[in-house]
Length: 405
Image 1 (tube, rainbow, N blue to C red):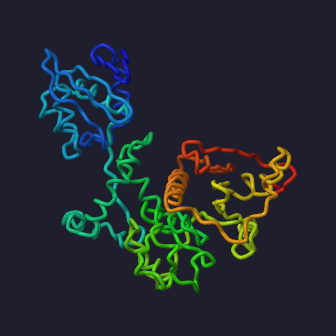
Image 2 (image 1 turned 30 degrees about the vertical axis):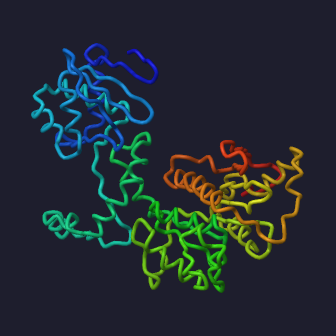
Image 3 (image 1 turned 180 degrees about the vertical axis):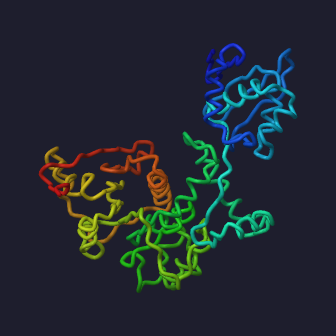
């Protein structure tokens, strides 16, 4: 193997050990009729005028060359519509040769093998085998226009998820599982409303605005225009009613109607956007979450050219706010004693979108179970230094006592 500026030269016939390849293929093959397909975003080169067939395959991160008769023909057919046996017979190569090509593509995480089915938590799915079998024979899903539209909206989300390590079904199972996570957002800022829309649009269907954060008795103001999903024509309308109507439009998966009781999920998270030291929003909330052992995450009010978010607290298991407060005092951080302005500061339109996007990406990684960097840590974001985010981690403090049983 030789590497030159991100180009990996692979000579399969020399470097691939047949016993290892058989073992690898055995792990990734679900049946003789499995239908492999290239992941979204994989590209391959045009034909080269050389003695042996040569093809360059790559994505955004890296590329490599394959010198193997039949490789190009195999790669061109990896679209998920043909089984492995159909592809091999069409190209006219042996099983060992086919396995060698498939295994090297799989080793670079360039292939999906499983075709998982999207299950909508708020949509009827019959548990009666005979009914389910009849629906499958009639290809009901292919004739469902709402489901076909959902597939089109899913494509951009799946095109990112599929590149995670260990994903071999295009990301269907991961994004479907987001429906089983319960999120409640408390806050009235631009960032809070943007997070609400982003999470709903990313498949976290059970996302709601907390009753103390949805401005029950307030109307939409000009401050809300341009930074969320609201228009100038919405000014004066009920904030709660208008946001509820719009949520049905930008949510990725169907959400239950207002007359349906909100379904409680085993996995849940409370998101608090604002100043946790102020009485108007936070009275008793955080204390209640600590007592009830409800996981929660903080996004502070922007102050003086920057903003802080975190930690994500799992009460009794990870550092709480008091743990962090004690640690900051011991480290000589006196900034926490500064009193905030009487009036809440608001992020600019550009900053609100950028900050909400960063936070949403981290929250989705946490919800998907692949990243826990938000737990027990705070992030400081400086508006004047967009490339420099300061990430500070903390530990349970023995003087706090939050972890005592």
